Structures are given as structure tokens and as C-alpha cells.
Length: 137
Image (cartoon, rainbow, N blue to C red):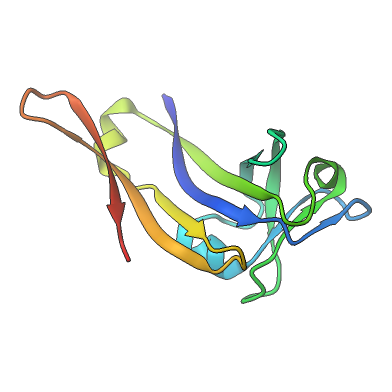
């Protein structure tokens, strides 16, 4: 089995941090549904500003709010306004690699979606793996 990225929110900005809330990251359900991230699913979070890397689970916040709120211990890793990358993953058989199509959303500074992208793996004429970023916009 190989661990493969399944969805990514790239460059979303932190809108809040709540140290006293019981752990997790609160995200706008619209963003999660567009990317394919489920409530209670574990995600990795990489802070582009500080380099901090954490893992926590997702809870859905208010729909349409564009929120990205780090809760509990995770709140210590980010400041409001920091750009983060949030990714989920799944384990697949290597033979499945060409059949999955991870979704990537990129964001404007107000957390509105800038681009709707995808990753695609295929094979070239020699049978070697190839990689392509696909634009859905």
C-alpha cells in the first residue's frame, strides 16, 4: 500500500485560533465538500509562514464562512493570517494510482477559491509514470 494525497486546500489563510476549544481544525463545509474532505477525517497541516507541521481532524464550521480555525493544541502552531496547506490522504494499491484524481483548491487572501485543480497520473508511450496538474476552472 502507498499513502497518496487525496485532497488539498493550498494557501488557505487561518481566520482564528481557539486554544480553549477541544482539538481539531474548523473548516467551511463548502471548501471541504469541493475538495472531498470529510468531517472527523484526519488531515495534515503545513504552515507556510512558520514551517510548523501538525496532524488533526476536521470539524465543519459555518457554511459559507470561509473559516479556517485551529483549535486546542493546534492553535499554538498558527497565527491569524498565516497561509496553510491542508491535505488528506488515503492508502491505495500502486495499481490504483492512475485511477484516482486528487482535488486541489487554491485560495485568494479572503479564502475564496482561486483555482480548482486536480492531479492526474498516467503513463507515457514507454509505460513510465507521468504527472499532470489539471485545471478545472
